[in-house]
Length: 262
Image (cartoon, rainbow, N blue to C red):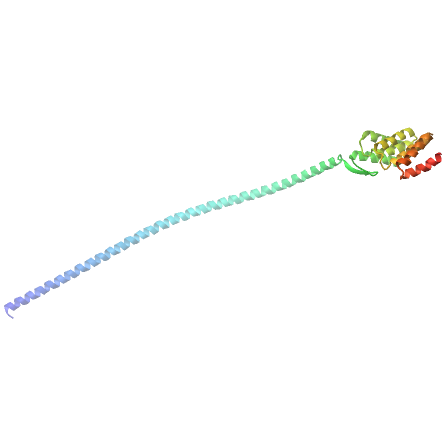
């Protein structure tokens, strides 16, 4: 190889060396850029991860705080519920006591009302049916009339006269009066107080001419007149009896008495 060729060969080797060095340098530059990009990507991912971690940490802290607040609220609510239950239990006990007291008051009130009713009933008029008549009478009237009639039926005519006499004076408007006058007249007839008996029998007829005992009262007047030896008046009374009450038993008895007077 001549000198020229050697120079050319050396130049070629140098050129090749330069080319190789340039390629290696280019490859190194390329690898550094990739690494930097990878590092940057990694750093971004780490930063994002740290950000997410911080966000999650913050959310966990807030959740923990919320949970603690919720627990406090639940505890407060439980305390309120317990207080309400206690109040309800106390109120239930109070209600039961009030109910018992109210029941006792109602019972007492009922007893008072019943007592008042019983007392008023002793003074309230009661319907009475006597000798075909119905009327209202006070308990005192009923008691006094029954007592006087009981005396008459015992045959104590003098006491019966006083009892019936007091009755018609005490109760001048009583529905018992026609019957009381009848028994008063009979008591007076039994004690031979004929004039007073006639007066009371006539009061009965004036007070209640349609009374069931009116015919007997007329006949009793005639009997009193006969006892008084007033035959003429007795005859007139018996004739009036037959005209006024022709279908009565007293009228039949009066006809027989009239026949004996003639």
